[in-house]
Picture 1 (cartoon, rainbow, N blue to C red):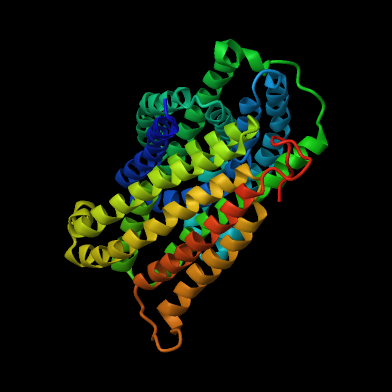
Picture 2 (picture 1 turned 90 degrees about the vertical axis):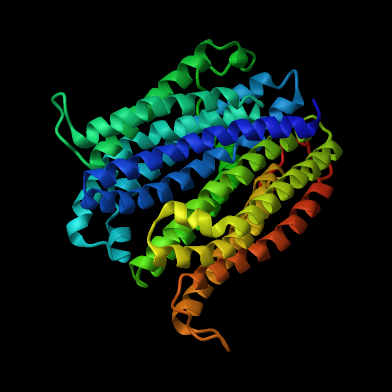
Amino acid sequence: MSERGVIARHAGTVLAGQLAVMAYGMTDTIVAGRYAPEALAALSVGSAVYITVFVAMMGILQALLPVWAELHGAGRGHEAALGRSVRQALYLAAIASIAGVAGLLAPGFLLDATGVPLALQGEVRRYLAVLALALPAALLFRMYSTLNQSLGKPKIVTWLQIGSLGLKVPLTIWFAFGGLGLPAMGAVGCAWATVVVSIALLVVAVWLLRTDDLYRPYAIWSRIEPPDWAAIGRFARIGVPAGLTIMVEVTSFTLMALFVSRQGTVAAAAHQIVSNLAAVMFMTPLSLAIATSARVSYWLGAGQPKQARAVIRTGFRIGLTLAVAMAATLALTRHGIAAIYTSDPAVVAVATGLLGWLALFHLGDATQGLCVFVLRCYRVAVLPLVLYSLLLWGVGLGGGYLLAYVGIGPWAAMHTPAAFWIAATVSLALLALILPVILWRAARRWPPPGAPAHAQPAS
């Protein structure tokens, strides 16, 4: 099969799993909304906090994909090294779990800083306390998912994610509304359903690691060695910046929603529609980025950097073609799409205008997303974090605030959510111009003289 076919099949499989995971949140939102407005409000705030913590910790572990894919590409003789690397990564997962659980159990500063009403904080704290039980299992399953992606075998994880919906949906309804001896728990019930599903997925993953022939050559199921702090440090040098990069991206959206909320319910509702669609659209370039980075690292591990560069070109051709097609479709159908979400004419009108900006936003989002993932293959993780912080927080969020409420130069304050989407689009356009240059320079210089291709330090 051609590289294009391998990348497309891998990306399509990952995409199906990503959409299944997104359906978890949709299920919680629908159920909590039907239960009570207060439950939906608690879920909205609580899930924002949980996602911020989870994606930061998840990014640390997901950044191990290029490390394991390179060892896989290195071929025979490196299987045991891959297994040992996975076992050492368990220590990093433990550290990430402890840090994440601590954040979920002590959300007071974040809740106070964002002005969450005291009447709502109690339910939010209970929701997050339950999700703290799910976090370690969810992170370990994400680590299992990353391992499968590095081996070019994402289908197992996708089937598990799709199948878990059959457990998540009925449990969420049952735990939220009560019945069969259980009291109604509202938003907290949604969290308990997530705990059960996360643990169930981890149990199945462990069983597969123990029994499936796919993992036998790597001897993953061996006695775990004492911590190799040098190896864990190498993991952290690429994983921590990667996790923080994702956190910057997520918080830029979270804070944007909080700033927009002061413009009233119509603006907030329109912004929510566009944010939801932006997340769904990003799943396509995200899946392609995962697939492309796995193949790039495979060829780097095999000692063929020229082939790795060819894979980058293939991934970009696919990604940009899809991004342009999706953006054009959105631009042409944005009014009809907005009308699907709501029947309120005022909200539809505002959302239609914002979706026009989303079409441009997506072009930059797709390009930078692909670049950031592939840069990790070349151990470039700190520079994207710096650029994200300056551009997403500075230009995107800070510029959006100024354009919305203060004014910038000849432009008066707009007092509409469009100000934030304009600024965010500009920030992503800048990233889409800068990151490909950094990527191509890193690819051309790989590997550094005298260093093995699969053992480079993070930069």
